[in-house]
Length: 113
Length: 115
Image 1 (cartoon, rainbow over the protein chains, first blue to last red):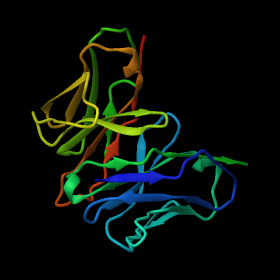
Image 2: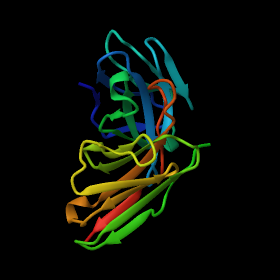
Image 3: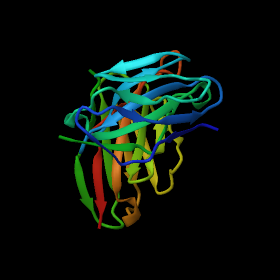
């Protein structure tokens, strides 16, 4: 079956710290992988995506590399800001899911000044 | 930019009421989805639709129904609201495209409280 496992939160970091949020997946075939961000009181926004092995998605200083050998898609940012405080969701979509997505449970990040 | 609009940000209803949540998208997307989001459980798919008048059950359809009479509008219906349906409801849409790498685009959510 298909599933996504994210590191449990909450995560609290100081401003300018390095961020890693782990995401691993189980899927049949070759999924597309996504990171979404949810700011307080809002819906989910697409942050970045990668559609094949070794692809790197990037946006707003965030990066994630599609690692097929470790079935991972970890989210990283070199220097977080207070404005990055949000909940981050990893998700996958694959050929046998059609256009359905499988989401992780989300990781809450708080950045303190 | 894609715009997915949910009719209400906050809604309070009573047990036993019939509740309608509306969602409209402006990008001519074929696919539309309804999720509920609860702390510690992430997003769970309730229903989805690949085309007008077409619907498919997701992981937790019990107690819900949907309607898609027009391509841009997807309605979620709570037939007889119960307190365990208090939740955040998120609507999403996506382009069907040629593959499965099309992102879903989300509305801002409706926080529904059933008293």
